[in-house]
Image (tube, rainbow, N blue to C red; front, side):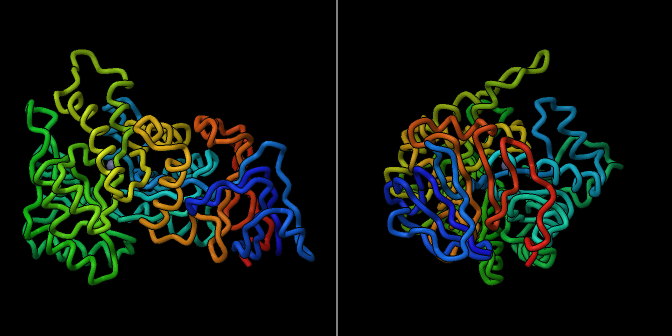
Length: 422
Ligand SMILES: [Zn+2]
């Protein structure tokens, strides 16, 4: 099947200016040409996909930091029950629903940053097979964490076991094995927790959690298996050690010092600053007696400084929300782009962070409109370069995956013509 998409404005996300009166030619779900309508005409046998006057055609958006099995509930007790009281099958069904919310909101690919068992990996496979309609998923399986670390939940009775929740490892050999186990399960990349902040002790904005030998062992083994490594981080010297010992993508990273910025620029390390989840600390209702930590207040200011320094140094910056943790799926992903704009990005740069850069990070053949890429497309009723917030209005969005319309006006189209699979 041959299709030609026509729009008043085409943002190809290569970094070039938008094409006025643009066209994208798609064959069997893959882009074959992008240009001006006047130059391309309508090739023989192509089905015309026309868009409303004033519409913009761009790549589908990507969120590079989600927790697809969790709802993002503001209620701490609900969030904990989702982690501990929910079976893997129940998690998988819920994860599929979350993924569909994101898809209907214009996000055609997501990166899952940790799910119990192999739930997100299985969902990825089910979507790829066509069993379930959903965005492209990239998944790490379980995050590797030191015993008692960021992902090894404390606070349970001695007789309670959370086997399968995360993947505790201690020492270089166990981290090496941990990488091999997650790779065997089908992980697309490895998630570590190398450096953390303290929400309990004021003034402790960062501390190392994994030691350098552990980080090095995990990264060397992941790289040997052709996998990249992403890590939860907070900042300071433990963040610099994270990058120096081989991590390819740092998450959160609120306090990035100058030495680390230089190292990231030199090594091509990605940064996913997760601005939204940090802001959410100040939006969600606190439980009676609960107060916000010193860490929350300090990181709120520090993240803007780090973002600015990283942008100026040419660090590759992706867009990820942490949806599933204090951020619900579907309605809020777009806000990360708005926050990037608030942090000094142009609208075009914010869109590129959520498309081309995220796709490069995830090694997915999407994120730019160019020959050879898959036709994951977003039609926006309006111009997001003039007003980024229109990306948050699902009633203005039409979403295509592999060239097929999968959502319109915020509603998922769940039955496809038979030729989709062909
Ligand atoms: Zn996260």
